[in-house]
Length: 119
Image (tube, rainbow, N blue to C red; front, side):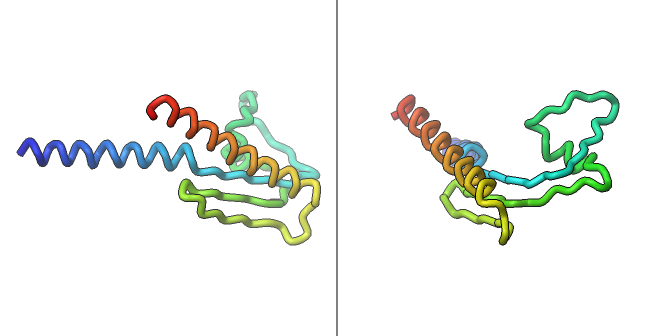
């Protein structure tokens, strides 16, 4: 019985570690072109940049334009998917690619720091 509890405990711990690693090592970078966007911040709420997507989905006003230029998703196992506007701005694509590279480098540094703490 104790062996079963130990196996279940290890399985649970591994599942939690895998979930945290997936969250820490997955990268999503999205770049929009927004020549005319009006956000209607209801009730005088302060705009929080880290909640941009939630706020935009909720309150982008009619008449605004928002164009997806590129979205890159890099999974923890380094599988990657990129969606890009065919005629996207070269400057925005360069900025998008730089953001992806910076995010990857930051994650790699974080993993190296963790490894150094435990290895």
